[in-house]
Length: 344
Figure 1 (cartoon, one colour):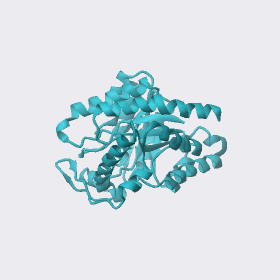
Figure 2 (cartoon, rainbow, N blue to C red; figure 1 turned 90 degrees about the vertical axis):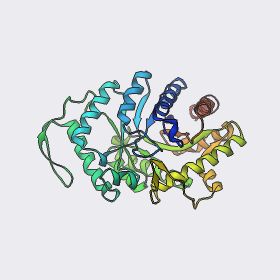
Figure 3 (tube, rainbow, N blue to C red; figure 1 turned 30 degrees about the horizontal axis):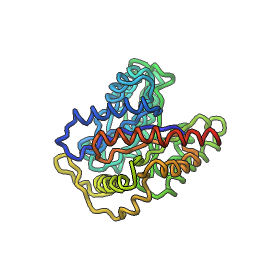
Figure 4 (tube, rainbow, N blue to C red; figure 1 turned 180 degrees about the horizontal axis):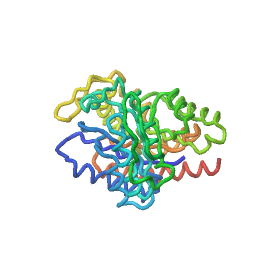
């Protein structure tokens, strides 16, 4: 099981500013490489102060200049917000400028507020995503592509330059529901998923759907991978863990406002709303704990067959605490999990 650090770019106070926000992301990425993470993931969201990265491809190119070997994963680029004729060329260029370290994670978009204000409704996002994905793959793998679909109609054209990575840059699809995970796996896609703050039985169902679909595919499914994103914070002690759970509760009061709620945003700041889930229930479903407990809890993840865990740990804490938690995980948790894997 590999580990990946999520550059979550959460900015509770807009006065913090984009320059400091993105500098923090770069520092976290260089720290992750030094500590032996396989890669970093880069979100994409617009118009809001949570998961704020308007151009994940630009950030991937910047990080490729600051690091030497890590995978640079978008998590995720929302295809319905883009014109694939433009985006295909941007992906190819980013793949070239990152020396092939780019892994393009793509999805349909998650926040109705954001998508509606950018002219692409959440209601049609699934159909638009599926067609956009087909168009994107065709443009990157084939010359003189024409299209006549529900969302795209165009005469033959060739995206230039042609891809450096053949047959196209590496691709992953983000999907949460287990039947969707199985369907995209059968189509030959690597998977990104998350249960968000859901119960553990959801992540087990997500992993099982991927593994069962791979098994049905035989040899063709063997190389396919699944990445699981979770809120994982390696706390100093029990008191620090409790404080970070409280911060996570505040974080989700904003996240839920957009993901399942009414989308109340003022001047780019997501308003916190009351949650039905109690803080104790949230604590049970997240992995915010000291190192010894984390070794045990992540052992279950390894046993389910997850290929890579994405550690999302930015809950609004200061950058120094964030970097210290990364260091604790790498020195007090990661080696124990690697030793158990080797023994197994």
